[in-house]
Length: 184
Image (tube, rainbow, N blue to C red; front, top):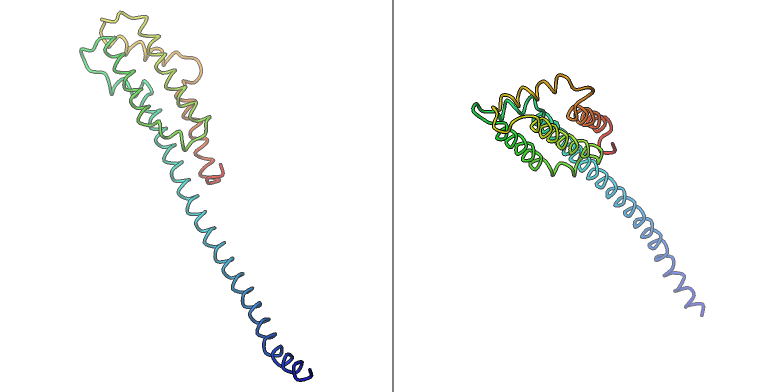
């Protein structure tokens, strides 16, 4: 019995320190791996955030360009050709606004609902303004008359144009994204 107890204590004398060292090593390795994983995870999140901010800023740039391109002061000179009738110029203006919109529709993924609604609203209001002015003119009249009427309307309109409101909102939100990153 004494021999058995002595053998057990002898075995315990060697295995107990080994078990303690094994537990300590396991704990240290686990902590190290967990910290390493956290660091890699944070780096990945930062990279993703940088990419997201870049994509959002590109969306604001594209939507700003869209709003500028559909503003009548920029749209009419680009679309108008001499010899066009009011009806033909109207059709070309509306078609250009719609095509530009369809080209940028995917940008809604990267901007807030408020910005996207203002962009859609600007598009609709610009088209409605063109329709409203065209109803006052003979469809077979020279396109110059429509050009002049739209220019006169722009000079006499009270308040901001829809495109100006949308541009202000886009610029405001882009500044927020630049300031706060993707949390904005």
